[in-house]
Amino acid sequence: MSIDGGPTGRLAGRVVLVTGAARGIGAHTARLAAARGAKLSLVGLEPDRLAALAAELGPGHVWFAADVTDQAALGAAVDGTVAALGGIDAVVANAGVANRGTIAVGDVEALARTVEVNLIGVMRTAAATVPALIDRGGYLLIVSSAAAFAALPGMAAYCASKAGVEHFGTAIRLELAHRGVAVGTAHPSWVDTDLVREARADLPAFESALARLPWPMRRTTTVTECAEAFVRAIERRSRRVYVPRAVGAVQAVRSVLVSPLADRLVGRTARVTVPLIEEQARALGRGFGVSTPESRR
Image 1 (cartoon, rainbow, N blue to C red):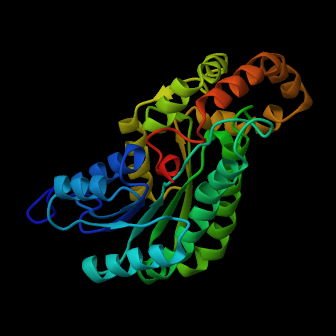
Image 2 (tube, one colour):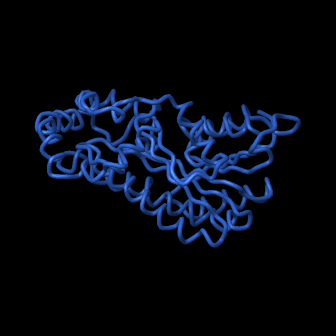
């Protein structure tokens, strides 16, 4: 959607940089932010999709191919954004992946890559964009997950990375407050994206285990609902974002979710589902979903 002569709103004229913008939550967040008047910098690993999205949004938006684990590429994207759009008012550090398999059965490189993208990638994104955010007293939204609050078998690296993202965000919020930069962490549960759909298709046993989770942890949210929550967070400079909002109640009882009682309850199901997940992951023969760029490396 065009900025020139286009809609106005609370984000009118604001520059928003989104990582992982080629598809899913990132792409939908970009569309909604543009509809409210923002100028978008789209950063990701799929140049054809980024270019198509920028064209869809119209004049006044830019895109950059960059891996969030590559500091030089991120720096170039930030420099290009500032040169083209004049600065950066908000950043959504959204890029993320989810590996297949367990610590016993799976590719250790896929485990490590999940942490590298989800956690180290957020750190690198923050480091690359903070100078520009300081210049404008901006806002940084980093995407954690409801998985930061509870450990799920078959998702060890993902849970670990998202828990790390949460605490990283909490720490840098305190570091950046005196510089006028606000930091928020987002905690979606399952969102109807390629990443989630492919995980369910690849590992039927995992899908069955998710169905046994208590509400709201088993609920799947639309990608539009999640993107709307992210854009509201940018507008309000929110400290925490829960998608759906009931995930906030899960966070409040997180100590129970990692207790010996939880181990016993989840363990009953895990004894059955984990061997099935491992069997299916072994047969799959790849560490990531088919649409994840890491699967093509």
